[in-house]
Length: 86
Image 1 (cartoon, rainbow, N blue to C red):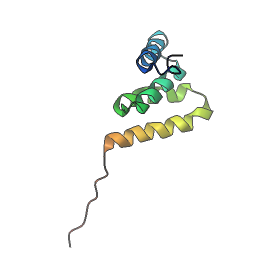
Image 2: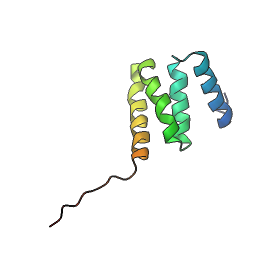
Image 3: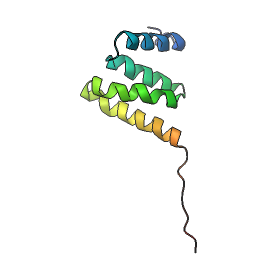
Image 4: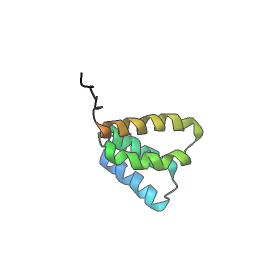
């Protein structure tokens, strides 16, 4: 409900609380990861996204995997290109 009302801090707290009550709650972990990623907090989003993967329906795994890879890429920064000397 908080997420729909754009009460993002309360939504984050709710997802974290749900995970404290049930660490196997894949839906709460996925939604927390999505929220954190959308807030630009990729470094915080990675763990809940990773934890959610084995606990969410197969149909949702591709989207979560894509988001997880995007978060990892943001942390890696720009790719370094090695130019050979001539």
